[in-house]
Image 1 (tube, rainbow, N blue to C red):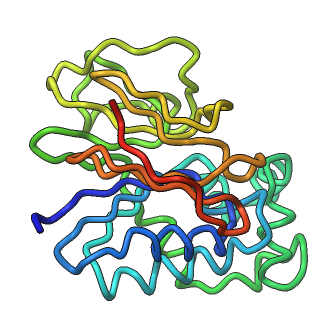
Image 2 (spheres, one colour):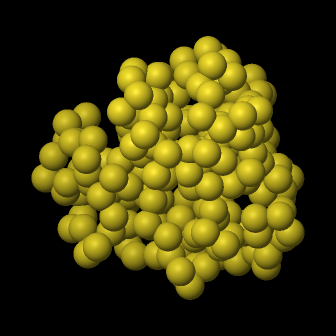
Length: 223
């Protein structure tokens, strides 16, 4: 089997769903697992999600990108105003997974170091991966964070100047199915908001889905 590039987005503290989707994928050491951000907040076990990502990096080729929720969590160490801001987006559940809501001291330094080191994008010969959205006319290394991490797909962006296919998350697809267009794929299907967690093999179009409790959904392929 040729090495696969598999994208997973917006886990939002659902470690059980992450475990189940990885079991369904059965990744091999030669595969690349690209996580598109939003590992924390909303769900019950953000701590467990980060611990699993750190462990996976020792077994597979893992690319973990920054999401807006990671940006908020990392920024919370910088001052109380950031912590108050983050509290509006699910921080309570994240901190409770470490032991007590509102207490950043319980979060291991290793987890903050991981968050601060997350890149904003990743690219292959045919695809690029970014958490939220992109400016089609800006090079990938010059994307503004407000766009790359926060901007929803309120409208479909134009194809990127690189000619590569964009794979994004952040904007929940309330149908439970990915947004599947020739130049952009959005694989956030609402995990953390009651929807499934989705993984996409970008080369072969294979899709895996599990619900927030890790129960397998029907596999299918993109068109």
